[in-house]
Image (tube, rainbow, N blue to C red):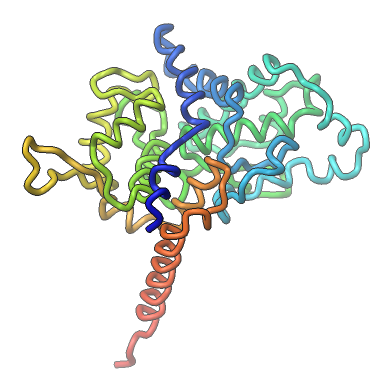
Length: 319
């Protein structure tokens, strides 16, 4: 393994800024219902991208997003944008950042509510949140809102009926846990699970607790300090994520004083793949996943092993 690969890759550049801004909301005691708004503001102002569903001009040069990771909301305005020169010009017009932030906040709040209620979201409802005055900017606003859902909450928005443009909201990358009963109630924690899996895999499949907290501190998460979205992160990570089977938290053999390390848990291996996690991470840091050669080779080998296992399972001998 390239000795510089881990040290270079275990950085979440965009995450640092949006988490610093999100932390500034903690002192204001943000109600649960407004968490989506606070997080959307942080994401928009930090220009965070993590493989959004709608491609805006600012994201055209972003590294390739996870295959099939975000569903197919890309067709939302495809016909309107391609057939209306004024609409194409509108995508290039300047929209004040404070206005864009407010619209993204409102849309994220709607999408979170739809997820909490297990309801579909429709294009009509989303346009209603944007208001007719800013409908021409819907492509950009929805892109930033879905990026926020994807990166912060680990929630995908997937089109289920292209005729009426309705969308389901589901946990990402095959993860079935949303943690809404843990930490701050009603807020999905899937995004943090995925970030933990990213850190562990990119770090060589086993990362010390000290290194984990060094990285989480840079994102505004501190052991023993309540976070307005995650609650107390140490108990969330070392207890709930472990109990749910997504992480293994074990003492380093022979360490004195005792130290601990994190690995993927059995449920993580069962529900997602190393390739999905690598693609997700690469999209956050805007790099090609092949720029992590040892991790990419390992992820490919894992895909091949899974394929062979499926083929073997399908070869059921006749009685």
